[in-house]
Picture 1: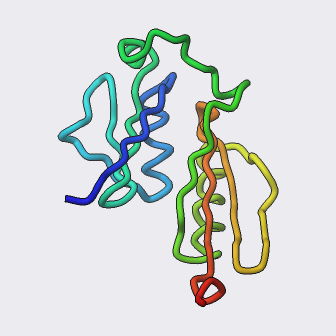
Picture 2 (picture 1 turned 30 degrees about the vertical axis):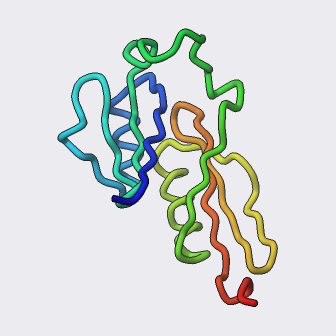
Length: 134
């Protein structure tokens, strides 16, 4: 079985956050979704667990960061093309996400970034595989 990653994010409004991620084209796994959390499927090996702040507090002894005012992490997803990066970023902006940085264009590498409604930062990165062949 390939190694998987579950990115756990505290959210203020579970329904709003779930709607945001599904608007980007991702799906929800109902098997791991209830009134406390929603499992958003990014790929076969990448999942985002949207967890209400109250429930999230059960998993840590530290204060929960307010991602709208501090950067707790920057999550980066690879995409298949520049167009995919643009499409997903524009969907994020149209569905309650906020602009984080200007598009990054470094020739064979291209990226877009956004914040979800809770301020969690995401980057979408395309790397032209032909540019990195030996």
